[in-house]
Length: 386
Ligand code: IPM
Ligand code: MG
Image 1 (cartoon, rainbow, N blue to C red):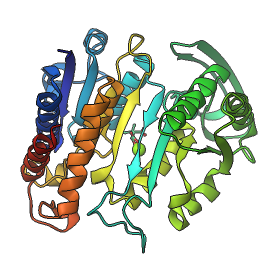
Image 2: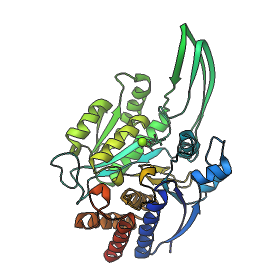
Image 3: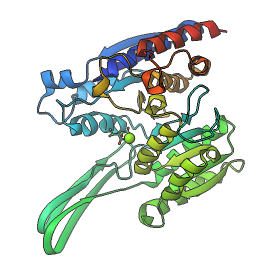
């Protein structure tokens, strides 16, 4: 019997409610397939920061971060609370975790399930079914840049990753004097290559035939020419899979006009951030959008699974949040752990409940609670048990 040790981080706002239902469905999946979970809850969120970390730039200490890495996976609710600066939650936890554990893939599938309506007219279930892969550790997310007033500035900046360490000495002279802010985007060849290769491998595993590579090389050519060159090299190893290039603005239009043409999308970090929210909204909204921050090498770094929405403080504690995104994030976690059968059961049970249309949370136009949804999916999963 396989046992998986998973760190649970409920976080803030609706985090505890949605993660409770996610865990409930994961427990049902374990019961159905004979695996065992060893859950360990960590209290990281606004209360933790106010009580223990107030004034510090990160939500957790490095030792606490490292401890998360001793688990087989991290299952995450959501963070965000008015008491905590955004930078603490972002640079001081979410982004840090991505870099610290070399979670260079952000997997954000967008699928239109039966029983869910798309804001796009005339879309039938599964018309939209996109494996969305966002590069998760470089590009304009490396957090390097500067800001100054006057005519001169000098910054020594450093990017540290599992793959490399890069130093930037930036000397700027500005005439006439003014105020300036700048932000560096950078990409390394090896990271571009491994990200694209992950996409091709996923396409092959799912028997998909086309990959769309997002870029903006017509304007930002230093960074995205490299991205495209590395992708073309990788594509040679997969003659059975077509790779098309799409400039991000055109891709945005096509995602609305004809999303059914996309099978796998591979996007650089920042464009992937933006496009994945669009992809989520055309399959019913953020309530249906899971994400996995993945290091495909489980020995090299732990992966983290979360809904891509935030902590929604306005509806926190009312029990009306939609837990589907969290439950589907659990499906991604099972897949990552190699428990494909359990992952399929979670997806099937979720879709069956959505298709039946009896349990609908307020975002779907219904009156069901977060708990009703979790209960219904867990119950359905146990009925499906093979
Ligand atoms: C996301 C979020 C994060 C991002 C923020 C909260 C740092 O928008 O996961 O998409 O920009 O990556
Ligand atoms: Mg985002």
